[in-house]
Image (tube, rainbow, N blue to C red):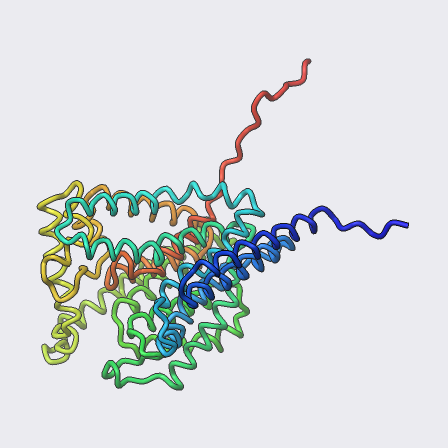
Length: 435
């Protein structure tokens, strides 16, 4: 009597596991350092586990990529520093989702079709590489481009593959983790590292504010019951406020306005009521802007001194002037990636993504950036949350960070682009019925 036969799929997996084990064992014997051997074995096991999970349709939800990027980056960096790891945490953040992306690409044909949407980021990568040929500081430009590979291009790939209209981000996970992060910042955070500004895990207060406000937007516009929003929102808003970061605060305001406007536009209101709602929102924004301008103009110089005299504020204006001069000198192709660092300013980038693209990559780079942003806005239409996040993180990128320092913008813009419906190709040689 014959025993039960093993399904062919299981046999294939056993063969794959055996070949992977043989390859890993052989490579371990060849690799010189124990660290490289451990990394290879760990990476092989992680890849195999991801593929096994994918066979049961358990592909990683992109919410965990957001959590890793925004809320575990700094604490992970401290742990790796304590362990004297030569690999920075930002590289771990960029590379960790790769096995899950490979699993999704293998299982889901539609994920492979979405890779065509990477045209703009890939073109930016190519243009940045070419611009090193005429950059006055190609060494710094190379470092920045390498960093953007893991903080920009890889997050774009992860989001485009893991997110789709039928597989949205689990925003409740993001909201809960952001709440825990904000409570931790309020409980064990410190204001001594940056006097008067709340931080946690020795992070820059700007990044703490960004993480807190992204969580606030996810909570405000996400699929979360209203009673839970009242509980989850206050710690995030308070933690972000205590960082005393102007750029993230403005980004939060813009994100809320955009989210409310899209909520009104997509609601079940009649066209007349929707127009009245949008008009009322425009009036509120205009009044708030005029009130803020009036306060700024009427405030005595002593009251504005902490803001105007802040080196971070004054230097930003100086950087914009320097970037404008570089753009005027070479408007088409720019001065080359890393050229701003050659000016000898206090910071090697202008803290404004538009000024950075214009000065170093010229009109061509700006066109790629604007094209990517338009694609993101188009994909986010109909989703107040995604549209709010695209707007907020775009504002973040106008006030701080560099091409490689605005991971939130690349991640959420890619998540919005991933919602773009793909065109279904009509089958060729369709036989029409004869009448």
